Image (cartoon, rainbow, N blue to C red; front, side, top):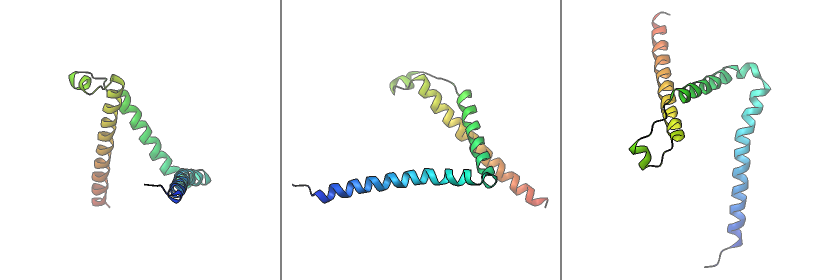
Length: 110
């Protein structure tokens, strides 16, 4: 079966358009953020809080090893990353639940 040259051109064009879309999806929010820092303050604080939660979770996570980890070739460093990711997920979930409960209780007193 012979390949058509139009298929190759179409694939390269699709790759180029995907690269342009990915670069645009990353660049335009950054440009908008630094264009007006007063409006972006809340988003930047939220992003900073997420980074702090991830760092705390990573620092608190243990480096466990055992038969399960050896069976699946999981190194102590990867074990720490996995445990930190799970801990960060639990912390963010708990924060969301607390935020929902606070918002509902605050409505009662308004």
